[in-house]
Image 1 (cartoon, helix red, strand yellow):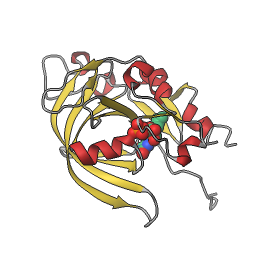
Image 2 (spheres, helix red, strand yellow):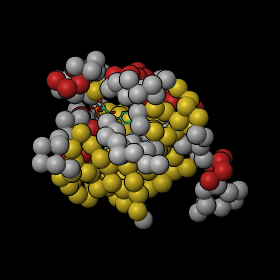
Image 3 (cartoon, helix red, strand yellow):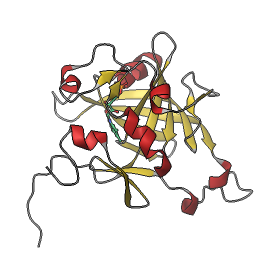
Image 4 (cartoon, helix red, strand yellow):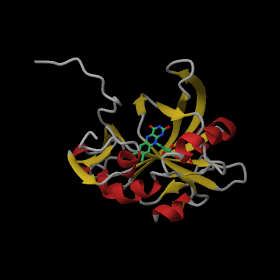
Length: 209
Ligand SMILES: Cc1cc2nc3c(=O)[nH]c(=O)nc-3n(C[C@H](O)[C@H](O)[C@H](O)COP(=O)(O)O)c2cc1C
């Protein structure tokens, strides 16, 4: 039997991306996000328009999509309640977010240079997609505060151990264990791999409280 329900979020499960962008002063910002999907060489990123990441994407038109494997759940969670915005927006202040200028350090992650764009890659992520911004679309209702940023991948780096041996065109799905955000919880291999600060802050934990 199906019930008609009113879920608070419709996040049924998408891979976690650590999005690196360049701030105005050339330093790097890094933010976890999960509203991402790919078709061909393009990717659509669903973003809060008040995020530093969104501002950087609109201004610098470049980013790196660093795909997190499930063993990086702790690092992702350390970034959950941080923002690169010096002035923390009210809706984030109320949830306990704070300004952090060095998110790589805060997460315990390492910057490595990109080849085609300025923002750095995250060394610990097994997949790096260097990308440029093609278009920024309004998203959702008129006052949603959301945008959909369409990016085009210009370079792909994959940890060698994920490849079918000797084949640079084929990633072995069995070897790729993406970190998945289901509702606001963190899963890998379909197991809840780490408590989620995001879920606690937004009152969207597994208890449904
Ligand atoms: C696992 C996870 C997934 C997230 N997914 C998104 C998302 O898809 N879109 C978004 O705008 N924010 C998402 N967030 C929230 C951002 O990370 C948060 O707004 C952060 O403060 C942005 O940092 P910035 O202001 O430095 O860009 C997610 C957070 C976590 C922990």
